[in-house]
Amino acid sequence: MVSIIKFCSLLVVFVNYVTASGFVTTSGTQFVLDGCPFAFVGGNTYYTIMEDLFQDSKQATDNIIALYRAKGLKVLRLNTMYDASTKTSSNPWFQNLTDGTAAVYNDGPTGLGLLDYVVYAAGQNNIKVVISLVNNWQAGGGMNLYVATQNGVYHDEFYTSTVLQGLYKSWVNHLLTRVNTYNNVAYNADPTIMLWELANEPRCLGNTLPASPTCGVQTIITWATTMSAYVKSIAPNQLVSLGDEGFYHNNSAVSTSYPFTANEGIDFDATLAIPTIDAGSIHTYPEGWRVPTPYDAWGNLWYNAHQASCVAANKPCYVGEYGITLASGLRDEVYTSWDATWEVNKMANLVWMINGNVSWGPFPDSDGFELYVTDSDWNTEIGNVASNMNGIINQCLGTSSGATSTTTTTTKQASTATS
Ligand SMILES: *[C@@H]1O[C@H](CO)[C@@H](O)[C@H](O)[C@H]1NC(C)=O
Ligand SMILES: *[C@@H]1O[C@H](CO)[C@@H](O)[C@H](O)[C@H]1NC(C)=O
Ligand SMILES: *[C@@H]1O[C@H](CO)[C@@H](O)[C@H](O)[C@H]1NC(C)=O
Image (cartoon, protein in one colour):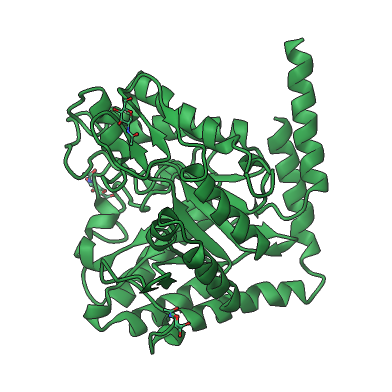
């Protein structure tokens, strides 16, 4: 009986893939959509959207999604970091970890119903979403809150505690099998959701809790191996990444700067080697990371090193976040230089972060990185990046050469689904 059920579900997965269009897949170092390289440009926008939704307004979601669509931005990255527990009365919340034995989920219109709307509205506008499943950082609860429910003392107990692994898996299962209240499509069957990130910027340490003396690359690799396989088992048609910053553990032959030699529990090459990790995630914050100037040159070194890793692993890389502060006065120059490297590598990228209007006006820039369509430098900073990268996609869509990658992808995906 068990094996018959298992066989049927695999069959459904396979048929679903063959007949359903619109899922983003991978082929070699590229994301692929509708038979063409999906060299997307997009952004992060979630505080604005979620804060506005929590005020019972859909205006920010509608404004921002219309802006993405009008400007050719194809992917929106979101976070689900609204965790509560007995230790915090945080409101709004998506899940309540209570005392850490079992969680309660806020499935109604003021909880996950709000996320439903964002996913639905993005889908209506042909925009794909990337969703991060837990925050390394304290904002919205995150890993430290999980650890606090066990009265833990080290941040990395999040990765190693059996109880916390169970709580995280329950959350993943709950979210991925949720049926969207706006269109009745289960999250794991919705081609709008292109990729799940296991976490936002996972590291051994958090904001307030330190790393244990034993935490290292193997700690997070072990966790990511288990959890990526778990996500794939529930959502075989969607992609998975770790959602990390792309640190190397010791790539000092390329650069001795911190992100290449960091000891944060992340090793980009080791992450890419996990079979159930589909793509490599990269963030770029030269100012906060105190890398050597000029930032344009350092960033190009950073991207080219990751491209080499992704070519070696035969998986795509994408820049999940990048940011230079407005105050630095360097944004135009640096983003323009990085764009040239992304174009050569067809490296997808999401700016941190695109902001816009809520019901009462423009949502404020709280971290110095925000980009508004009304900024005089919008075009140099994001408009040109999007139109150049969209040129790569359009060139393919306009010719028949895209068919080659469809075949490769179908074969690869089918074997993944049935293996
Ligand atoms: C979460 O659950 C705990 C335990 O039942 C409760 O004390 C707390 O108020 C809840 N938090 C929220 C935001 O509902
Ligand atoms: C880093 O790598 C370099 C050369 O590959 C090696 O000489 C050095 O010992 C390594 N450092 C650590 C901390 O592993
Ligand atoms: C905010 O809305 C106003 C009025 O519709 C519009 O002129 C302006 O461009 C919007 N600002 C942003 C940042 O979207």
